[in-house]
Length: 131
Image 1: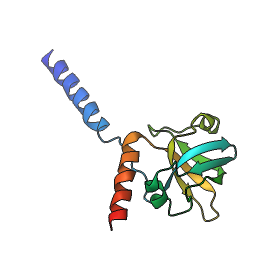
Image 2 (image 1 turned 45 degrees about the vertical axis):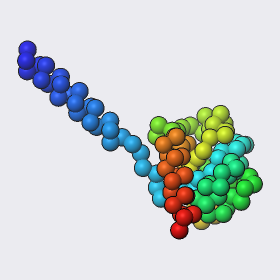
Image 3 (image 1 turned 60 degrees about the vertical axis):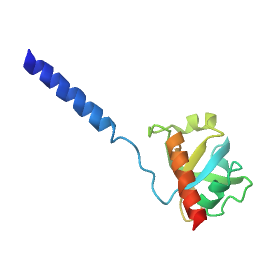
């Protein structure tokens, strides 16, 4: 009986500790913007009025909206790092996103950002502006 309790405690401890390491890491080469409008296979991205996004997008969105094409096999991820089907993207307008584009400017990956990731990008942009 004590052995079963010990096994249960160890199993719960392992699950708890492993859940702490599930936080996703965004690639450094992604640009940040706000998903303004979706008209598949195109999306309209804007800075959302945040100056920090202009810094992170390296000027490819200059405060106005810009339209980009989604790649045929675009990889979409939601705020919890789950894959998102293309049809569900249409209800995500107004959310901050990180995108990875190829050399032609076509979006290959689009990640919906959670609040912690938005805060991290704001800190990163503030540090870049301070330099």
